[in-house]
Length: 530
Image (cartoon, rainbow, N blue to C red):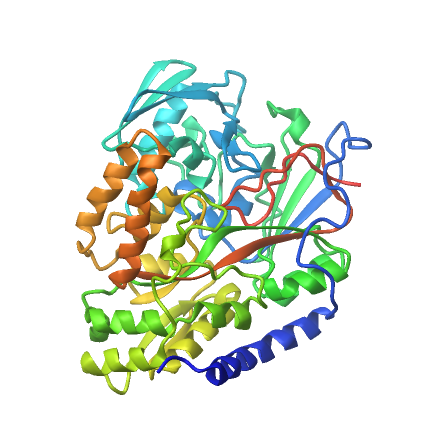
């Protein structure tokens, strides 16, 4: 017997009660689901020299301002200080920044041509040797969050001061894209050579310079315009301030009341009240809400070592109920795969990969020796509490108790990578299938604290896809990986989740702002206040 409509309505109503309270606290109201309320791109009237203070709200403090040691979720605190090798456009294609162009002279080699006019804040120069130092340093950071990007690098070869070849042990088709994210942020060669501690003393070349005296731990980071920046056209604000506001409603209240100008990580149930308050919303589908089981040998939780248990969880995680209950219907629960429906990696054949079925879940749990269910813990941060609570309610229908444990600010992914929790909530990219696999799913990635090898055969499939010459050849292999990930009980997509940032009506941009798939908000470049 499948999940009944009555049970599903009860679940939606229970979780929606909390969402209704959130909407009331934020002011309620109707309005649309996103889109700008006034033009964002506007050059007329933009300051010719950096002017004013542009204030952002981020949801967590970063444990480090070292790009090799912090996650992509902390990019809002990295990008004012650091330049990346590339950036992306609104189609998520890599574009020049510190690198002016790139080519692929061999299947396992990327060649980058570099700018020759970039100076770091400490006075040192950017060149090919700088890229070599950065990539080799990143590769040497043990347990770092970007191991999937650095580890395949076999050699970095300086051809001349403005040309560098990056060689890999396996083909890396999307490496230029990866260099637009936090791991592509370039650190001063002087700081690297001196083995400087960058935790709270960053060393970048970016458009703004981090201000130590103005920093309030857990409260805010302040950056002042770099007077020697190579791209003066991109720096329009004199000061960039990033305030750390963990609680969702507090962030929204801050942007509504004018305490901040840009809010990252707008929750779906905040979109309508934000829009009705006159805020501009930037939204898209670029990541997948995912429940992943890491302890598949059952070391911490023996039940997870049973394939039947993991498949029972698959039947309990009702995508439609999750979307209605948590995302106010604004998510996209389509398909059993991980790729967004507008992505080239989306495959409709995965739509019916698993169905919500409580009776089948209970049958599987009984067959595995857990007729009464079992208990396990997951980590929690304020920004994912509702996601965890919704998942817990879905699992409870099968008798499984998921205990939600708060972790220290900024430590969620670190605790997961250390193996503190057997399973948890993840948001892998839904537009970059390479990052989805290498960072989140692969046992060679950063989320394999239990040292599993159960996906080694799939790793061969991924390598075959990466080495293929075109996406048409890669796509069926990537579909195979998505399907196997669910069927083996590794991870389960819950919904494509809207990524949303809110901007006040005063924010303008002289060019389309960089809003890369891994970012929580637009970067400060080209932004100004009208």
